[in-house]
Length: 215
Image (cartoon, rainbow, N blue to C red; front, top):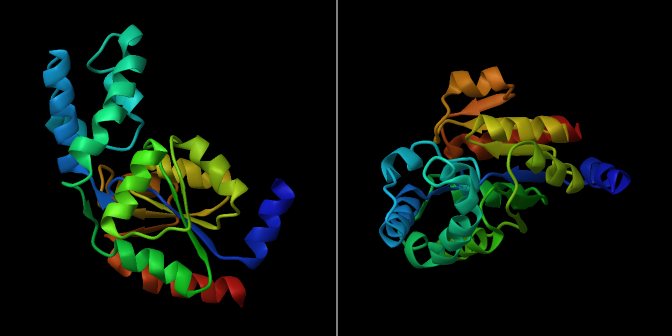
């Protein structure tokens, strides 16, 4: 696997993207799903607080609201009801489609590596007309790095310090965007190599990066 990743790395541009608050603004949809979960279970959940700190897996967030022995079952229910409540209210982040297309225009592969349940991540991409070459779900922080390494990704783009940690594991260039819960200072302190205000400036950054990489 490592030899294959090295081969891909040296010949094919592969860029990974986080999903929530990087490619998509899922706050309204996730809030709606948490409110539905709260109503169904009778457990109060501060959905506004939840969506202010998106990034980690739902199981981790649910430990703030449910006893440990209920988290796995409630997380399964959250994923089950997610398509009903969260897909339609979610929007693409500014520049999301163009960022993916910029990778593909250079002959590269654009992949999504996210903590979100993979079938739900794929639903978001289909609904919003995002066309990554591959979607990999249910991975967070350092675990993302293992998938990025296996796919030979040279760049990983994300909004959270956990995304920076994933890029570091993969030996990939970490590009942070300040569209999520972490500001530029936090992203740089975590080790981000570049920080952008949003994805609209990513195509220009990528063209410069690829010119240097192939020089």
